[in-house]
Length: 396
Figure 1 (cartoon, rainbow, N blue to C red):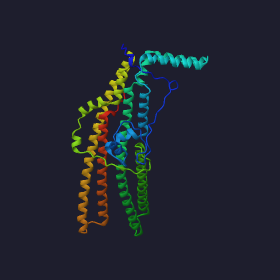
Figure 2: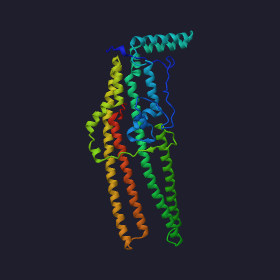
Figure 3: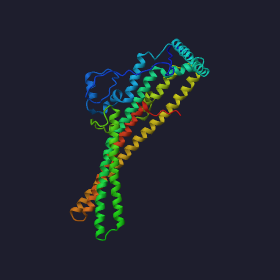
């Protein structure tokens, strides 16, 4: 059995040890974003970049660290805990604090048998080797910092996806606008045909329903776009109704795809994975064979999960690339068909309706290819995120 109690720390009930978050005082400014945690020292130029009215792709994690309400609060609490000396407490101090908390609980119980029994139970649990292990694991400084960085990275990647969604939703809105316009045109055509006996009332009603459905989809698109943008702004420290400049998304190139190496990237993912690193820290501060054995098994299971998740992410990139290639082929075919109809229309062999339909098909094919391009971007950066520490490590 390992005995390295020197750096064991104590996690007591919140009611027994005062806690608090010291929010850093920072001058009010009209600049955006409107929140600041001042997590680490930055020079004036770095702060100016973060505080301009732009959302840059490369600064997302810094924005999350400093201005995301959840993440910045976690860093503030972490620094406050450091300043209070709540990490890496000497083992003897751990026992002293357990005893002091027990004595205070017994005095507060004032001969109440139920409260005394509860205090005794807490005392017995806390003073067992496993209880000290649990306290050491829960308040280990490195594990606490890793947990915050895991949250920070996860939030950053969620925001990356939301930024991509802003662009794809706009493309979908454009496509649905084309569909709505095309449906409206077909509706008008069916009404004209009905007036000359070339269509039925059912044809008109069907065309009208199609048009109304397309128009409703447009409204839904706009609602989703507004909501997505508002969530991004709030999560990066702006107000929901602010209007910062949103960066362009770095698109994925063939060269970027060629650098993907599943074997190498999986090894990097295993070395970077936050869940695994946290449990390895728990092993390092544990003393009981039971705790060490259980956590070691968990880590091995997590490693298998990470390997499987990286394969899934890799395959998702390949699938997205195949879908993009297919969309580009469909676009090429639609453009060729449009060119053919244009030539026929010029000679009177195709109607205005034929030309409008071919133009509609080509425009839809172009937007479909653009959306597929952004889908590849989503899967590629999701793959990189897994490599960089947040591949799924569910050991269940």
